[in-house]
Amino acid sequence: MTDVLLMLLFAAAIGIGWWLGRRYQHHLQQPSVADENYYRGLNYLLNHETDAALELFIDSLEVNNHNLDTHLALGSAFRRKGEVDKAIHIHQNLLNRPGLTHHQLAQAQLELAHDFVKAGLLDRAEQLLLESAGFSPNKQAWGTLLLDVYQREKDWQKALDLAQRFELQNIPNLAVRLSHYACEQAQEAIDQGDLNTAHTYLKQAHELKADNPRVALLYSAMALHAGLYKEADEHLRKLAQQDPSLVPTILPDLARCFAASDDQEAWQNWLSSCMQEHPSTSVMLALAEIIRQASDSEAAAFVTRELRKRPSVKGFNYLIELHMQWATEHAKESLEALQGLTMALEQRKPAYQCKQCGYASNNMQWQCPTCHQWDTTKPVYGLRGE
Ligand SMILES: [Zn+2]
Image (cartoon, rainbow, N blue to C red; front, side, top):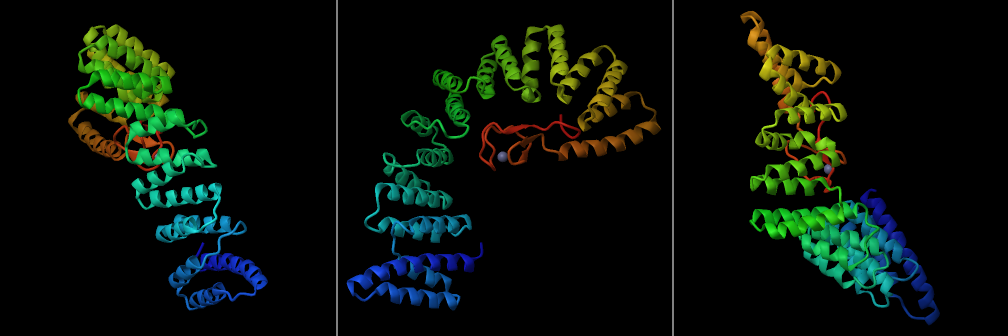
């Protein structure tokens, strides 16, 4: 929506308010200041002085049951356009008008809180939302925004308390979000060396979302740190069942656990069954490494077979490296050139991508930094990934 169109809509809304007010004042036979302001505002508008027109319209705003929704919609429209100052001005002006019902007051407060969030004024948004905690008619919109404020502030405990205090079940993905808030608390406790507190939060995270793979990963990290490989192994295998797409992420830790148990046959069996159910290049290469201990040519034959089924740049790289061992000098030169190309391709492609917004990175992130969704970042599969 262009500025001019928005302003014309605004003028129309004020015009209706002015007309209604004029009818009322005509009744009382009193002169109207609103008449004069309305014409002055229109004059500003026609002279393209939109800011001056807006100031005047807002200040002479007649708020009544007929036009409250229009004012709220206009304020939201300014916010969506990125003109947060104007949105705040409109909504604050609404709140200063006498005679609003609790319902109307809460509506305006919610819109103003949205403005504050957009402007990065999180403290003010939080304060405003807490003031309308008891009488907000749209509990879901109110709870979603306050939860969003706490999430942006990384105040995980307040977010968890909020969900416990109010019934916010209708917020989308609430269980996933709350479980991750508890995981964030657990991670902080682990970083501070407070493992008892970490266990308490992980228990809570599990209760909130039993199949949150991050819970198993944090348990395994604590066990690995303590040298408890069997326990870590159990958690990692549980994670692989909960979310098989994350197997490439946990494979190095899982390899450490199997190495500690010194049971290579079990490791090979696990990799083979994983390859059957949820194939990935990382698992294929781990299997190739085991075969390679006996024979390079058998490993090359295995990788070639697998690449025919599921081609991947990472797999080709490995195959080229194998072939370079027994290649003639002339062939080696060509293979090196080819490897330079495939390695550049592999390095250029990020290993992880958010399924929600497509944000790509080389690190696993439980919350996407762009769309702020939880548990949407996964390893990239396909030719240039796993
Ligand atoms: Zn995203």
